[in-house]
Length: 254
Ligand code: 6PG
Image (cartoon, rainbow, N blue to C red):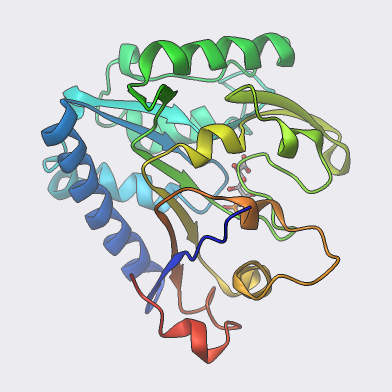
């Protein structure tokens, strides 16, 4: 396993975190479209990114994105219908995709409402069908991720077999702690991406951020989020989320 040194960006507060991340995304989306004619972006689920998605939907920001050339995917999904309050698709559609009227043909949804294994196979095929290939590998341009208090990212939870799935780009996973099935991009899909951004806000994540970015502990299984090996890996943090980082890491910026 090669050691990836992530680039760490620390914003003063949540507002600056979302503004600076929005600016970065606008630039990266434009670069992808200029270089390859389209941009393929996988959205994170959970609560943190909602404010970012709502910001991107505001007139000043939405005007800066060529939505007709942007394809949206999902880093993971709960095995629930898209109408469920727990659906990551529903959160993103409400906050961003519907307000900007992104055509449904450009929304590539994980079908949480069908059999999890079938949904995983289907999404693997969707990625192969829609993503440009780089070195023969379906390649996302951008992936947004969050991190949970246990170090999970997407739905790659500690001590689950999905962490070791290397063939498929998508897999189903039963999360015992939550007593629920989920769908997730695998590390194979995530590590092939041109850029991965881990977006973290709030003091509640300070401990897991410090643990994730700190030195590996001998004999301790690496946290899922520390297994990310994308060639361009960025952590976008606000000061609260970065508050437990050692000084040596706080000055790091890409
Ligand atoms: C999900 C997410 C998950 C999330 C983290 C952080 O489906 O919940 O994909 O990986 O990013 O759990 O969630 P919060 O942003 O709500 O803290």
